[in-house]
Image (cartoon, rainbow, N blue to C red; front, side, top):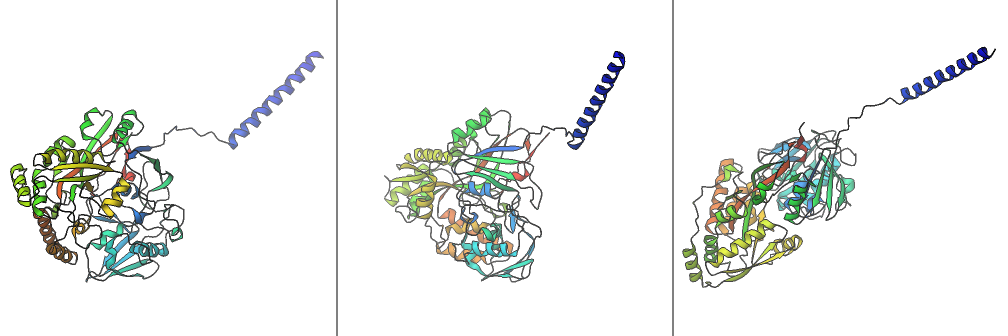
Length: 506
């Protein structure tokens, strides 16, 4: 009997055990185990020397802002790395034979970062906003020449110019934004680019996140973290400590200190210019401008300040746009002739102040070297460093300065570079004025024959050089440190860091 009871209990316990196994087994089937790959997020971390100008793409001024926000916003067209244009929101376009009408066919299925589908209302609104036809300030004076914007059908929109201008097409990289965001452009950034803004802490950082609904080739990186770090030394320390893994504009004198990073460099089509205010005596005297030009030792600046990462220039055109380069005449330093010119002009004991943007160490260091060079011809150049916002307001916008130094960003089209010196151009902060120059620039802007335009642009460069419109120092080469394993960084002839192209190798 005892054995029978024990056998029954044992049987009952075994049945309960089987039941539990079955129950637990069922639970596992309902929630299958997925093997974890433990993949690390692919994050690029970098810095910028100053915060972006604005979240509003039509208010962007600085090169640093363009570099970042071209990843967020797209135009009908976008820059290509060969200095041309590629189709973007517009899948194709045509230009009428008379050069007056541009018709764009809009790509279907494009999503904005807020999830809405782009439609013709968005395109029409954006074109009206950037051109000022809705009463807003124009994003570029090029839109002065825009007559009408016409929606042809649900897929096509046309722009008609007052007069033909072959340079107009390059302005179609301006951002297309959703019309429902029209009252919040300054606060909310919504574009169609491969990255969207996931976080923005003003004066601290901006975080870009891959936009998985992007219409084109998806970005390889999961995100990009950009930290605002005004001090160049601090940026370099962040790289060395591993806080960041990508640094643009590396101090070229410190390249040898960098380990575990690939160093790459290239012309960036940015010209470092010492601007002299032509409305401020004695810089209205071409002899004084020539004297300063002859006293500045560009090769020494490139060697000492840039450790050789630069190319001396004689006019406002970098080596990237090869068709436009005029032959160098080989302006060499001539201290004796510079002194003679100052004596002729009656300014042998000249003193003036250069206002330099303090957050750009390159320009401040260059200014200090120029000050030493000018001492050799009897000129005292004082240096006043000011904040970037003040530089934009006082120097660039209000032209309140005697001399300044800055890197002027490259453009895809010669007109956008050379029109800066036209008498009536709103951003001619040089206050340069030359009637022959104005006539030739205007003629070039309406000349459809490519070779004729090239010759006109070469002639105006000769005028800038012969007139010493400014002191053209160098094409600044961009020196980049990128963590080994990150690949496919692409250089562009304008401020644009295309994060979507960067990959991480195995």
